[in-house]
Amino acid sequence: MMKSNTRENSNIIRAKFSAAMSAMYRHEVPAYGVLISIVESVNDEVLSKIGAAGLGLDTQEDVRRISQERHGAIRLGTAQELSYIKRIFAVMGMFPVGYYDLGQAGIPVHSTAFRPIEREALAENPFRVFTSLLRTELIKNKAIRVQAEAILSTRKIYTDRALELVHIAEKKGGLDKAQSNEFVLQVLETFRWHKHARVDFATYQNLHDEHRLIADVVSFANPHINHLTPRTLDIDAAQHGMEKSNISAKAVVEGPPKRQCPILLRQTSFKALEEKIIFADVNDAKTGNVETGTHTARFGEIEQRGVALTPKGRKLYDELLLETRAKVTPSADGSNATLYQQTLIDVFKQFPDTWRELHDQKLGYFRYRKTSKYDNEDLSDLKALLDSGKITINPIIYEDFLPVSAAGIFQSNLGDEEGELTLKASSRDEFVEALGCEPNDEFQLYEGIQKRSLNSLLNQ
Ligand code: OOG
Ligand code: NI
Image (cartoon, rainbow, N blue to C red; front, side, top):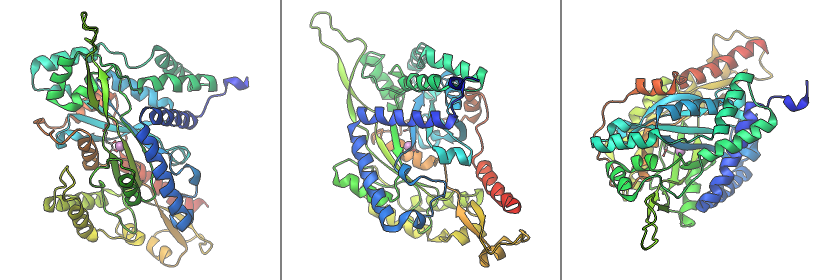
């Protein structure tokens, strides 16, 4: 077989894609480049203080890759766009996981996360894309709804060549190196920012009056990537770094509080930029004037991840978050941010904060490793084996998203005046139909990793 025909591993295609997105976004949004340097210096400092071992980093993890992007986000307009993106991401080894109903928070989208699902693939390159689908049925004004759907139905967000390469990959079971390089460049076009809107000023205004997000999805020729998110080892330090660099940071860090044993996901972002756009009814025949306006959609975000929780752990997390928010609702202007953080810390004292408690109470997922003391023991009493140091545990990192946090990220980038929509109940079935399959269940994936690690003890 000729070497040039060798298939490129999907992990490599994903890594190339994530690097290409990063370069493009830094160029498009210079503040994002500043954010990356803040994250890099915070991470360097943490690593030099406590080292990779102190962080309990996965042994497969490459320290040099710590500050790289972990996720991005896009918002699609039609079922067909979603079903195509599923096929495009599959070529990169990314599959839909989870269903997020943002409607509950007054945001007219529902979402899934396309991500690698195998542990080895995650370790290779964990890049994922939070992918939302606009729910046009929520547009109250019927004429505008019909118009928005008509506008969306005529756009083509993927290049012909990108789709051709998807077909080739599906037929041949992959792409060769040259094809995969071309594929990455072609797919990048879908996420590029274009300052030319596809609609005129009046239409933009009408869409915007319904909801800012509706204008963001419908007015443009393609679903520009709206943020990228590198991983930080100390999100509180990075948040301070943003404030010091005059980057307008979101008022509160979303998710659980700072803890000894990090759980799930903590996130913060800088506010979306106001960018100049040019409307479609551009040239005034007499004056030659171009009708311009501004649009806010694109921002930067950072994240810090902890252990994945079991359904029992997740239930406790949801309850404690609710309890916190019943006491203090974080206001968009940040005026009660300190009180909110303090309340969060206090309420979360109810959440056990050692790995052993999280493990023993079945609140989190872990991988097991045998130590030199282990000698083919019976695995029925894991606690005894852990007590005697015959086996040890490592947290399995959470790879997904949190709906309340996601809503907070959306909202901080939409302006404070939103929340007008009265939303119908979620429509998971519709989303699944548009996607063309059931998304993977995140709990099953983590449980599978934990089980396999247990089984591999037997075979070691
Ligand atoms: C997605 C917001 C959600 C996250 O990290 O929770 C998200 C969007 O603004 O399109 O990315
Ligand atoms: Ni995000």
